[in-house]
Image (cartoon, rainbow, N blue to C red; front, top):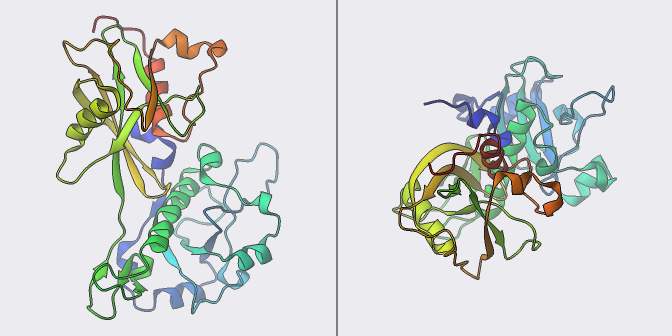
Length: 322
């Protein structure tokens, strides 16, 4: 299958060899901390620092540190081995090992006290390089997992971090806990007039709209989740769910699986029924309506797969009756 659409998704970009074999080294971090070429990505509450630009045309890039330049105690700090850089155009040479380290409030203030200098992935996802976007997305996902899984799910004992930061081991029953990612489907639905269905979430401003989406339930295929979620949120039945691509969404721990679908035969586009809990309003939009700057409609952010699916649809010629 073609990955041409997935390649356009900001958070699906990467230029890192995750170097799985190295994770099993018992003295991995001792070796990496002794290597002056290792680079560390510090994170504070899900944010990072950017390197100073040399010229105004320079692309933003993550600020990485040598282990000796980061004031954290390697014996107690949580460290996650992200892998080896593959970006020949980065400031660091290809093959550079990269480690993520979360900072406490005190450590972050010591490193950079100006909180405005700490920035998030959403605002820079489309501007960072493939490598930097990839390691930041990877870091946010794995560090959130550590935050939310500190204890053994069987006996409640605090677990030990092993395998380069990718496994938590229970010292009592010997079980291992691995990172989890929650799958969610998101779907661009069209009707027989080639309009797109958008919904407004209860937590958003009244004029913000996006595609319908929802989490996949146990024992359910992606395609079945598309049909179920659309019906639950809109009262509409759809058919022909077609996979387009996927993108990690570490806010906090999801992967968004993108589909297109069309209104099933016999369904009337005007019979929309918002669920009233998650979705408060539903509307069909033509390309002209969404392209009109005067309509006041706020679309999903450019880092999202929802926006990528919409932009791809907007770029296509209208196909009424298809």
